[in-house]
Picture (cartoon, rainbow, N blue to C red):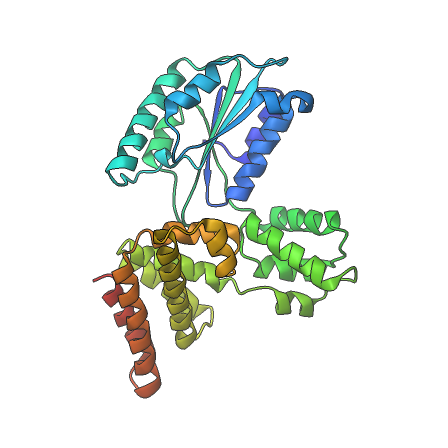
Length: 344
């Protein structure tokens, strides 16, 4: 398993592999890496003829391998991208999706024994939470393909990327303001792009100030709440309590933490209700005023609960809020009891 810096060196030397498998928590960052390979391999004039994409959560691998076996047009190589390849995770899913996952991973292993020399197959799987690690399936593929774990940008890399985004948008931001932006933005490229766009529009050509950043940007705790609720969905109370303790350590007040958890459960309830009634992701994103990427992640999270469980958890939030307001008992114990009840 290699990182992006090693991949970049190999591509620049034109040392190409027949198959690349990306995994990581940031889909936009993975997409950027896929684009880097594609741009270095394909002639833009023939891109449409030699570039194919498949949804890995729905497509049978026979269809993918057939596409890999067809010859490229006016080019030495073609590129086949399989996005959101859920067959690379370790979950079994329901019977229908489980059967497709099992079949696809078997056929992928068969294909990699003798991959097409004229095709570069790129497969990626996006982690559902920041704390997820590469699955056992991905680890086993490491010797058969070039596996790249895409970690989130941090430190100088994050600052350099954010500065480039502001400069490309024609905005001016100072070093101190850039540091503040990087410290407050959720470390996800889709969200970073969205926050840059918001700030650029808000400042409308003038220099971006610290006040602009603090006024326009959401708090990072929202990502922690997503992960906390995700652990509750897995009935992993220990890790959920670890995040609770992190939030308290960072200075978040327990009533606010409970409010954010309640808000998350309400959103999940409305998303699940909407999906069950046939509404599309795009419609729900507009109705609930969620970024499309966030909406998609939350729809996946909502599928881990039943409507009955979500309704019960919302009621538990309301009951716990009443306890926090009306009694002098330990707030931390009360929210811990609430979290334990949600997984019972």
